[in-house]
Image (tube, rainbow, N blue to C red; front, side, top):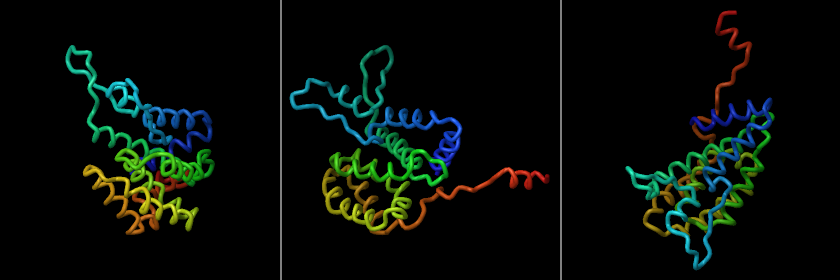
Length: 206
């Protein structure tokens, strides 16, 4: 998975350029409020238009031809994009690379906030699915029984909130992750090849 490689490179560069990681994370949060995690809630009686509401959630807007009228991207497109940002955020937070200034405690805090502060919706379930598949193994390694209790909470409290027909595939995926104990094995792509200058010289024949 490319997100693990991107995260490792970003963390490595951040060792000598301390401002990089905060800037990258700020950009991720700006593009995807679900990586905070947060959802914009409009008060009752709000006069905000549907376009304004979707913009606040992070939807991209499109215009056609000479018209100034904005139309939102499809929900599927929006969720796929959000999933990518959440996966990258999770890959950074779960990295055990030495010198990672943004470590696993942030992954645990993110998961707790997502489950305690936000309702179970298609958007939050998409974020949860992406996050667990990237960071679940490291969280299990570090927190063991606490993490398992959190998974039980997901099964008992979070998933039953997803009752819309469009939520069905997400429920199946997340429940499969829980029931098949996929968190006990590292996710595909996490184990990156390690190299150093001596191995490079060896391959060059020096």
